[in-house]
Image (cartoon, rainbow, N blue to C red; front, side, top):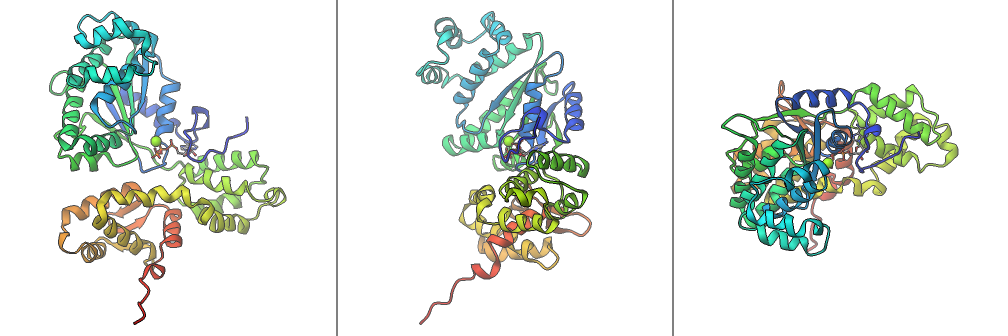
Amino acid sequence: MATRNIVGNVPEPHELYGREGLIDHLWRQLHANNVLLMAPRRFGKTGVMRHVLQKPRDGYLPVYLDLEDIDSPSEFVWRLTRELLAQDVLRSVLSNARRLPKALRGWFADTFDEIEFDGAKVKFKEEVEEGWRETGGRLLVEMEKAAPTVIFVLDELPTMLDNIRRKGGDEEAREFLAWFRNVRLQQKDRLRRYRFILAGSTSIDAILRRLNSLDKLNDFERLYVEPISQNDAQRLASDLAASLDVAWSGELSERMAELIGPAVPYFIHLLFSQVAQSPAEQRRSLTEDQLSQVYNRRVLGPSCKHYFDHYRGRLRRYGPRGERAALAMLRAVAESEHARVPASELYDVYRKTRKKGACEQEFNELMADLECDWYLVLDVHTNEYAFMLPVMKDWWSRWYPMARLKKPKRSK
Ligand SMILES: Nc1ncnc2c1ncn2[C@@H]1O[C@H](COP(=O)(O)OP(=O)(O)OP(=O)(O)O)[C@@H](O)[C@H]1O
Ligand SMILES: [Mg+2]
């Protein structure tokens, strides 16, 4: 089957390259732990989750929830209910449950089949608004009775916490976290029978810090979704090349590795989506220089700008002052002579831009976020920051160069 060129959509299990080891390890960890998938944006977290969902191992039943647009605990409980009812096995566990809260029991008995009807959601949310803790808690605890081990696969949890915080305030988000801890643990440190896999495209630690949460998710085994190996990257590239009728070669693979750096599959797909737009004749005998041109003119150029805009847009989360400081620091790293800047120098850049409000803790939090969002990495031996991926550095230099951003002098 020809390999699909997908830039951004969630890959199907057979479209995953280089994740076999990680997925095996994840299943091993699930015996005794919950799992937190850690990675910067676009590294392939959701692809791994989808694999778990579509190819569950014996004895497990995964239930997937994308939390990105949820902004209240009652909405969470609604989605959870809907997903549980969609699975026959779990539906029968719930319909036989004796100890469900009254609101929920009545709801199942009277409106069991109405779940997809317009208006069901509003009615449901009204009924659980006050008692969401009890209702949600009971729903989950009932899942211990299901024969397979239920795995709750929760994508974009940090975004949901942030949405709840913005809409209902920090306290509501903290309450959700306290509740979440309670339902995971039977006694202080003993996990219940079901499991959770969490992931998010923003740093979970940053939001836990911001909320001053007592729950640090210590019962989660942290698994890192890293760039794939150069071998797997070559396999992906040559399969994509074959589907586009490109004569691929070892030299082209090497050039690709120089351009992109560590092999994040997303950027390989992005590069190929642009190669695909070259004339067919050129594609058939693509040279290394032509590949570089595609990278410089197209991947870094206006036609792909929207693929990167979310990285820039996310800096607004820090508020106008934090955003200015983050911009200045990214620029300093991108434009530095060796593309590496000592942490102390970055702190000076931060202090100058942030002025009075500067403090070391905020700086550290900002750097932690930038590592997650922008692929900055700290070399702990030299204490210098650099971009993990040349493509991110190149994009930043291309669109936000120092010189162009200087204010024009006003004529008197
Ligand atoms: N193992 C892989 N093999 C091939 N392509 C992949 C793989 N993992 C990810 N991709 C590519 O990366 C893109 C993003 O993948 P995915 O949505 O899984 O990442 P994510 O980490 O969940 O992103 P986000 O942080 O935006 O939620 C996919 O559209 C696909 O192009
Ligand atoms: Mg994702």
